[in-house]
Image (tube, rainbow, N blue to C red; front, side, top):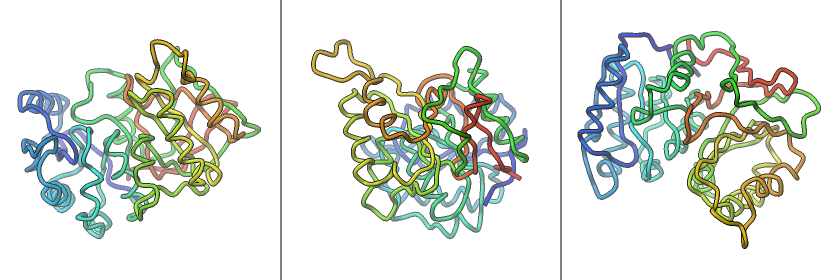
Length: 306
C-alpha cells in the first residue's frame, strides 16, 4: 500500500511521537517547512512536555491517529526522535492507518513506527529526515523531495559523489523488500508482537553514539534471534559517533562489523549515507529493492507513492 505523492502547497502534519523540544526551535523548524513551500499543521502534543516525552502516551498516539484521519493533511512528518515511540504502540489503531494511507516519514526512535506500519498495515513508510533535521542540506532535502514527489515510478538511489557504496559477499544483485532503521530500536522489539520481520528482506541498520561493544551486543542479539539468517541482504547506513578514543580493551567499529556481519557471508552493502549523520538519504521501508554491486547503486523496483 502506497500513499499519494507530495506536492508543493500540500499540508504536512508535524507530530512528536517521542521526545519534545524547545518552543523556539520548534517554531524555527516549522518556518523552514513553510519556506520550502508547504502548509504546516502542528500536532496537539508538539509543544507538550511530560518529563522527556512530548505528552502522555495515549495523547501522543491519539495525536498521530488524528493526523491520519484529518483529510486536510497530506503527509505526516515526525518532528524528532529521542525516546518514547515504543510506549505508544498499544494505543495505536492500525485500522485507521490502513484506511487512511499517507506519507509517514522519520528515523531514529521513529524506526518502530516505520516498521510496524509496514508490518501491520502494509504501508510503505520512509526512513528520512524529520522537521528537526538539517533540511538546508541540499543532498538531504533533494533526496526527500525527489522520493516523496517523484517516486511514482521505479528509481535509483546513489550516494553523493565522493562517498562510494561498498559491496561485500555478492555474487549477483540481491532483491528484497527493505525493512529496518535504528539498530537499538530494532533490538528493543525483539520478543514482542511488534518485532521486525526480516524473512526474505533487505535489512537496513544504522545507529548513533553506541560504542563498539554495545554494537557487538546488539548485533549478537539479532544473530541469536535468527534475524540475519532469514534476510536476503544487509544494508549498512551510518554509525555516527560509534568510535572510541582508544581501543586497548575494545574492538574497533570496523572489526565489529567484520566479525558480526561480514563473517556470516550474507551479501552486505555498506557506507550508505542514511542515519544520524549528514547527508541523510531517504529510504522507503517496505518497498521492493535491488542492491546492485555491478552498477554501484540501490534500485527501488516499484513506485513508493502514487
